Length: 110
Image 1 (cartoon, rainbow, N blue to C red):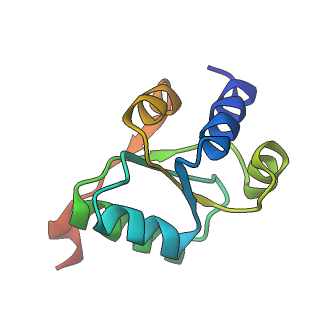
Image 2 (image 1 turned 90 degrees about the horizontal axis):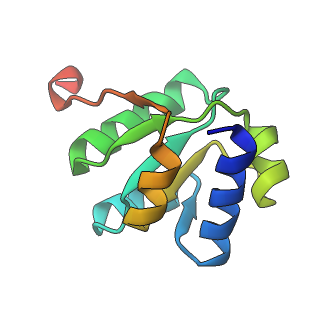
Image 3 (image 1 turned 120 degrees about the vertical axis):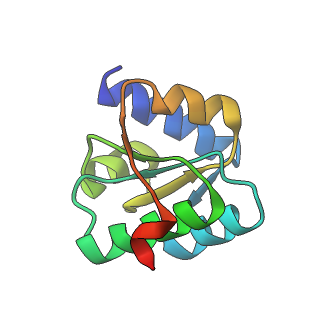
């Protein structure tokens, strides 16, 4: 699926109120069990990626690498962010198609 299709899906998801954007909102969505998948921008910092991986491992949420930069995401959904939690299983499944899943393992952090 092309990145334009992914942006279209993410945009629909945002309009439906099923996105949590940014580190804190992603953590909250994972903690309360709303997050069905977390997606990160290709230019997210190593430090932020490590924190996202820890959160996803802790709450058993799948994590995927988007083939887009934060600026490309911003053009598509109107907000510059590198971390997106999709809080709808259908949207998350569609968005995850063809993306690389980032492995999360709690043992790695202890």
